[in-house]
Length: 293
Ligand SMILES: NC(=O)c1ccc[n+]([C@@H]2O[C@H](COP(=O)([O-])OP(=O)(O)OC[C@H]3O[C@@H](n4cnc5c(N)ncnc54)[C@H](OP(=O)(O)O)[C@@H]3O)[C@@H](O)[C@H]2O)c1
Picture 1: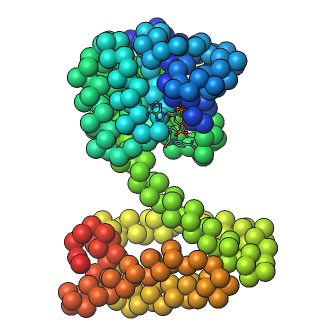
Picture 2: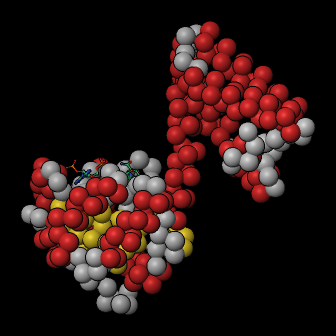
């Protein structure tokens, strides 16, 4: 189907914070939206904004060729689509829910076995603000299927199509969240140390932002190192171990939980033990790949 003739209507199933953001983005772009959600209060809120109500999953699937799923995980997809298996043939399911790559691949197969086309997405948004300039969506799955419906989904966020592997969007999405979760917890610990030391978090934050400006440099350096087996140098590992101890002391001196820094330190220490056993420096990257113990 060409972009010119693509239907400007879509169904959205799952109206958590993310599904609601998607419905609003579609409506603002003039796309007609039919909505379904397990609990109906969220449907009422979207109908008040101009969406059409589907009383059942079957009605939501029947209403449009394309159904966007925004559910907690892939297990919820089986619960939802399982209510209307007979309405799947000929439809296109775009599952933009988060889960593991293997669960996305299994979900894709399950949908296709029931007669619908499928592609997956991972929403890399600033919270549920898909209109934020930093937000975008990873997509993966069969390229012709994605291409045929990319224009319809364009109001959601900029699109990054990665490849045919149904799990690929989730590989990249979960890899980025792998960085985000520790960062968030580290930020909590750092600001707790500032506050419990009797100082002002607002005074500290500009320095945290400034420090983050070096992250692209570190990512470039470490990606080169990791392409070559990882950064490994015994003197540096010892320095990181000692550095972790300083962070632990700074936190615990003021009663802040340093569990996260103890965990970080355990990796430097494991790498030192592995280096000793191997007679050569072993990187934490190699440890995480399971290539050294
Ligand atoms: N929110 C964000 O900031 C954000 C950012 C990026 C990516 N994401 C991802 O986007 C997806 C949706 O996010 P969200 O924050 O909207 O998630 P959410 O609050 O967990 O809600 C998602 C929807 O899933 C439905 N649901 C869960 N289990 C179900 C089941 N067994 N049967 C039927 N419906 C079920 C909920 O229905 P009820 O309303 O009936 O409970 C709700 O409508 C998630 O995979 C999330 O990881 C979210």
